[in-house]
Image (cartoon, rainbow, N blue to C red; front, side):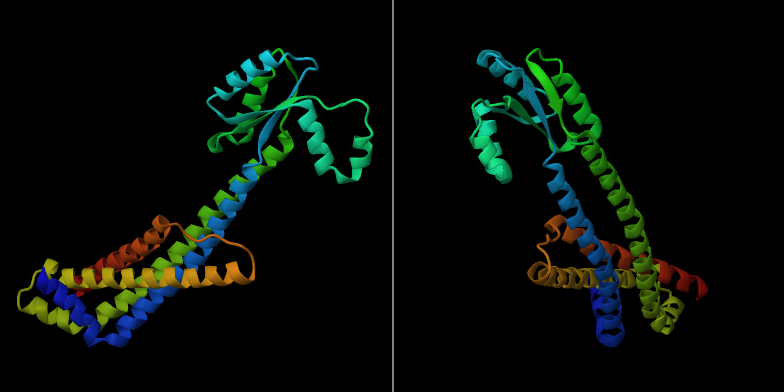
Length: 285
C-alpha cells in the first residue's frame, strides 16, 4: 500500500505541469457545475420561502361560542398535515386591517360596528404545502359546524406547484448536462496523464507486473486529482457566492453535506476516469 501511495505522489513530482493542468481542469469543470448548483439551491430556498406563506383561513360564523372555537382549534391542530393553528378574534382582525390597509385607515377607524369575522389561520407542514393536500385539508375544515367559509387561494397554490415542478425538471436536465460535460472533459484530461506514462506502463508489463499492480497508482492519482479539483471548485464557488451576496443579492451557500458531495463527485470522476483510461491503455500494450 505504501508503494502505491509513493508511486501516486511521485507522479505529481515527475509531471507537475500536467498534474496541475489536470487538477485545474477538474476544478473549473466542477466550478461550472457548482455555479449551477448555487442557482438551484437559492431557487429552492426562494420557493421554500414562498411556500411558507401558504395557509388556510377559516372564517367563523358570527356568535360562535368561544368554547366551541377552542375545541375546534384543538381538533384542527391534531390534523397530521397541520403545523400550527392560530385563532384571530374580531378585534384582532380589525386591528390588523387598520395596520396593514393604510389607505383605508380613516374609514376603518370611523366604523361603528366591526364587520370582520373571527377566523382560524392554519399553517401546514412543509411536506403538505402542495395544492392537493391544501385542498383536502380545506375540505375537511368545511365540515366543522362553526365554519362560515374557508379560503386558501387555490390558483396561487396551483401556480406555486407548477413552478416547483418546472424548477425541478430544469434542474435535473441542465444539471445532468453540466455533469456529463464535466465528466467528458475530466476523463480526457486524465487520459492525457495516462498516455504520458505509456512507456512506463509498457516496461512494467514486460517485467511481469500484473494489471492490478499497474492500475492502483493511477487510480489513487486520479482520485487525489479529483479531490483537489473538487476542493478548489468549492473554494471558487464560495468566492462567487461571497461576491454575489455582497454586491448583488442576498444568497445562500451549499450546506456542508452538499459541499462534501461536490468534492466526493470530483474524486469519483477522477477514479472512474483513471480506471477507464488505464484499462484502455493496458489492452493496447
